[in-house]
Amino acid sequence: MKHNKLFKQTGALTLALALSAAPCQAAVDPSAIDPVPGPHGYFVDTYKTNNMDNMTPESNAVIGVLSPFLTLWQPGSSWDNGTKLGPGGNLVLDSNINRCIEITSQRTRDQELPAYLTDRQNQNWSSLKGLGPYEASFKELAHAATSLPDEIPADAETVKYSDKGGANGEWADTSSQLGHIVELVNTVRGPHASGNPAKIYFQYMRPFRWSDQVNLLPALKPCASDPIKDGGFPSGHTNAGYLASLSLAYAVPERYQECLTNASVIGNYRIVAGMHSLMDVMGGRTMATALAAASLYDPENAGLKSAARQEAAAILLNHKDTNASDAYADYQSNRAQYEERLTYGMPRTGDPNKAMTVPKGAEVLLETRFPYLDETQRRWILYSTGLPSGYAFLDDAEGWGRLNLFAASAGYGAFHTDVSVTMDASLGSFSAYDTWQNDISGEGSLSKNGSGTLALAGNNTYTGNVSVNDGTLLAASSSAFGQGSVDNHATVSEAVNAPVVIAGNFNQDENGVLMLDVNTENDTLQIGQTARLGGTLKVDFSDYPVPAYGMKILTASQIEGSFSSVETVGLSQDRTLVVFQDGIYVKKK
Image 1: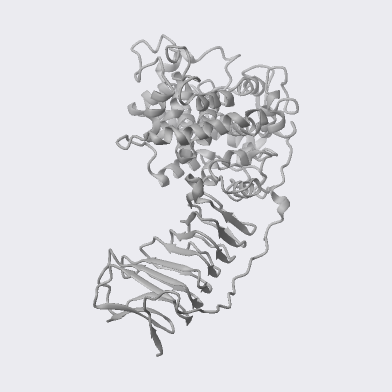
Image 2: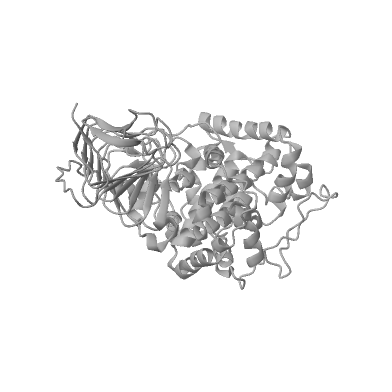
């Protein structure tokens, strides 16, 4: 078998490569992400119609977004005489209350306190838990406070306690060092964000009024007010919790998923407390998603949202408490919690084949999370990560109910078009380094441009090719590169203690750098077709300095050319690397 010994040199060898990777044509019509109006028009244009003067789906944007509920429920003339509609309505709404009975009957003593506090403390205050190691600093720097201690008062079953905030009567101070973030939360939770018009319109009872088997938290009995004015759908506390959390996620996208998870916890405790049903909570989340997007999309708030983001980056992120506990440190746990609460496993009685739609303006919700992408690309992310259809109560015309912002904040779910990414590391944050955590499918290609680093961590199956033109593309999973070929004109790296697979060809020109971190005998690069080599190979053996003789660190169906420069770190002095026709081996020196 012919072989060439690899050696370290600089600039001596020039290799002409016949690069085979070519862009793949889009597999989905670009019009797929065009917005579709609801009965109210486009929510971001009409959100200020949400008031008591407008009480129809056509005149009130919030009622319009929530109007799919009308396929299951017909409001009555009073709080207690509405009608479940047909088999679907009976199936879904009976399940809705039965699940409340189940959840409240299983409520633990440990859940009682947070369920009570979530109800009684300001939802802005509750949302701060999503900031994790920045929570204490936010409270200090923003002068945030609650008047209610973290306990259930002895007389709570007879006395209704309300949060009066801090000394100034507010939850936080707009004149503080984090005043713009405080003001952003206040603005998103502004005069057009109430759930009361929708509650009065739908007249759907709270779960403990549907069944006395729903175990209402005793400490919240004084909060069960006049049923005529106190409907269940949608949940106002859930709406408020998501509005505050989405505001914080916009300003502090480094905690985007954690803030969303905390919002879902706020909503879930409404069910645990017996105050709201599953449908109420899902309705609260849906309306909050639309309302937050509308406020952030509104040109009147452009300066404020920018100032809030800058404030977070310049001040809050420099006050991290490294010793603080973080309830949302586990990504997989966060994702499982959040996505389970998107639907709570409710029956799917609607059209299972309804196409995903992306609401007008919804892309603004990802604006700070993906600052290096344009509006169209953010819309494709929302499109590729949306919920399946068939949950009739979430299938609004615009698509607000089907958005999965947790998944969207983890990057593309599919390359439905050819994706070109330009990251400027000098801008810091996600422009310098980002990780796409989703499993990416689709037929599109990926082009990595700019000086930043993009890591791909999903179980990817996209079939388009990859071109690395600038910066670094990091394989953070074995299948990061999908099913196509990879052209490397910059840096390709890996951080996986397992084989990394390039299914097609690997082509590296003289400007390219391939960086491999070998930690185990299985830590290899496997190229399904031809490897055309040039440029530099860097291999780090620091954690595995004495690999077995004959170990392959790179395999291919065939190898053409050779690297101009090879650099190893940590490799035992009695070993070297040798290239054969089918791979690069560790051999005796």
